[in-house]
Length: 155
Image 1: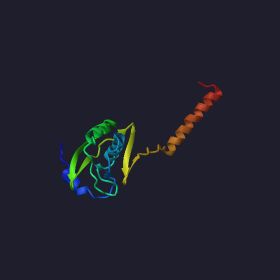
Image 2: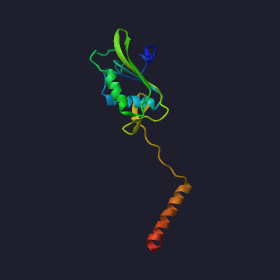
Image 3: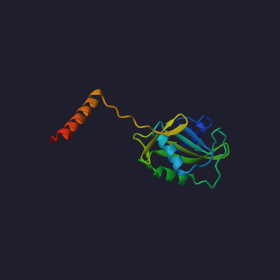
Image 4: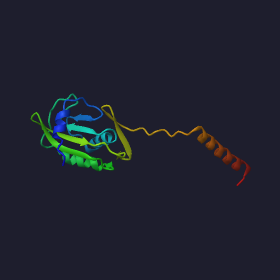
């Protein structure tokens, strides 16, 4: 298992961004899955639990089951992204960090792709299908042919 302690030490205190998210407490597994999915589909990144949005380091109490929640979160994703996770001590406080690597293929949560834009996670908007002018002409031609067949009874 990869030790990410040094990486976490370097980024704690940075503002939330498209590669960093803080959570004061352990969110439900689906919320973690959304974050993991969005980071994997963008540039990769870090989720640090036990730090509030204003960068106040609160730590996590001993009764949090972060490993279990993380496993449940990853189980909701397809395919499974590469992640590393562990408890980290920082200034006497116990934190939990998840490092998400950038995926080479889209990672899906319930059949949808999430991405990271700035410090927010959102569903990726599918690209609109566009036809060239010739494509529209061909659709029109087929449509007119079908109308001719139906009106003239031609088979």
